Amino acid sequence: MSGAANRIDSHKPLQDLDHWEEFLKDRYPEPEPELVGAGGSAEGELQKEKTWKRETTKFRDYRAEARPSVKEFYRLNHANQTLDFVMSKRREFLSLNHRRMGIWEAMEYLNTLVDDSDPDTDLSQIEHLLQTAEAIRRDGHPRWMILTGLIHDLGKILCLWGEPQWAVVGDTFPVGCAYSDKVVFPEFFPLNADYQIPAYQSSTGIYEQGCGLDKVYMSWGHDEYMYNVTRDYLPTEAQYMIRYHSFYAAHKERAYTHLMNEKDREMFEWVRKFNPYDLYSKGEDRPSVESLRPFYEELIAEYFPPVLRW
Image (cartoon, rainbow, N blue to C red; front, top):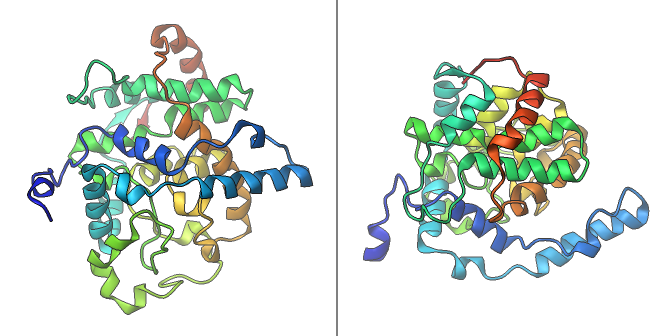
């Protein structure tokens, strides 16, 4: 590794968490408008398939174009996300005993996650959440989906509790089974200790064919954490959107289908419907937090109690 790479902070290689999402937008360009929203007909299904195929052909050489900090971020992620690590983080955080607060309070708490690298141009965390929710709202989707857009990234508060970036954001993937080459930067997986364990490196590993993703341990991050915080209050479709929105190898690349059951396949259509709002709705337009707050506080109260365990 070069001297420049050695100077990257292993705890915080990304100057800004948005750099990960900017990288995703480069890797997965926005679908062309004429192929989006085709409906449920046979012709619509064909158009959706064309959209996916056209997206895949537009991929650039992301390995060559990625920032050095992004490459280091993925190197750390792939090297350290072992099955043992995932189980330790589940024990540490899924007891939900770190804090008690409501959803809007959690949004304000996440807002303290300040990026010092470019304070004049970056939007606040609350504004990013509102951008996603407002895009879903403008398109007339159900209220629960608007709410999902608002809260789906709140699990990033793990960064405020000392967790390294590579254990909070990044593409998620199953652990305890062979790594798909559809996961971004698969060349870093031989650095993972699990790579040397034969029982973990068959296609199903510790799982069974078609067992269902609910029985599969995913790499640790804000998706799994936030799913567990909110799972008792939201429809199944919303739970999938929150839990798997960073599982790009599955919902973009169609990998790991051998672990899915029929429910997963059905619900992943909702994950794919949600993904464009997650990835492409964040821009430079600054939403008015104060004017939007009454609507979203009412929406939050429709689904959540005043205080949740985090």
